[in-house]
Length: 634
Image (cartoon, rainbow, N blue to C red):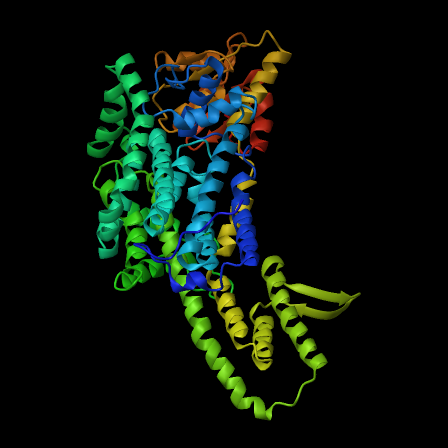
């Protein structure tokens, strides 16, 4: 299916580089190939990591909806009580396919929905970049987002959380706002306005007020420029029907909850999870200084690969993002001020406002990162376009001056030199992907190449000599960009996606298998304190909830611990903090190394396996758990 790109006029005119190197069908195929390559890490290894803490809440709510058919009131993982913190649209997107049998109700099945939503967001960002400044802008945008690993792996786009839908809401909604402001016909404008309103509904019914920055950014970007104000003044009526449609889609669920749960609903969804988060805190670990989003984003932009091939001293993502911000500020002066304002406000306006609150969490800033990535892509595309236009002509002029000294070349020598130029480019590309290349006959080395620059330099000189000055400059500039981009960091996403780390799931599967093979085995989990450790409490409960009844509390702790460890009739697995296990190791009952095995399943959390449950230790370790230090011999 082809997607028509908006015209380049209106409040958000495109960059001149949007027409370089064009929008031909061949380049459309290249853009599609880049998009597929960048989306691939979103789908790989979805079942290779344990479910995360908040993800367990949302997964439980979706599965309970699919199981019970209660589509209006999500349930809470720990108690199966009301979960009124979020509207239910994201739960519906996961639960309905499970209920219909389209996807399995597994971690991988539910995460597949988020991967698809994230791929759609990437598609919109590729179109956004292509419209703004051409295919280079779109490609750089996606590569930068892939190199920001927490966006994918820390409460990120690959997990059954809210972030995939919210990022898609912003990317698609703002794309259609730009298209609306740039379209020449009333029918096209109204279509884009309706699309933007529906994407806003997706964001609002997924994460409530977190979507409000979408119309704020769009409105601010329109009114700060004369062209934008003119578009709003002439065409604001296009938004009447979309706004009423969005209101009609959003209101019913809120009215239902206010009528059904008047005491709990508003105090939970707004009082606890908006007002308290902004003024005090729900989780004390979320209290951060005002500059948290600035320093946290800067730290996470750092490459996890030392250096980048030739430009060893450059931290690529940081340089490109800072350069994109400065370029956007510079473009505020010229014809691109509307788009520059949009990209800068996309990040600065919401981040500035959420920085005023007390509670700050890394993933709150995810929907606003594409603005920075697009600005960096805009800088790269315009820089390449300017170099090609200026330097290409100079190379052509240089060749004309020196042509009188060049020997006359026939068609075959010219073809041979062109083949060598293309071979140099191919050799550089293969070396970049696979590393050094060696051609040998037995023990005799015939050829070796470990450099990217040398074959490209040969190709550039040959292209210039043959009269293809613009192509020579384009190859040289593109090579410099490839060396600058954090491609190695982005490629690490595949390695990270395929890493196996699911000790809790393996623990659950092993404990259930033990219960089936030995029906007389006592089932259940003893947790020393229902409130400590706070981190991971939902994750622990979701992962181990069906392994038997939980016993919690600190009363008679030493006696209960002794019984659970040593009494064959009452032995069960225990969840302790790392500090509690260190203390327990000193007790006489644990001194016998055959009593129990402890495995770290989360940071600061130890699963102690006494008696027959010790058989699960090796399986949990193989899935990424780390064996806690054995009890010392007396």
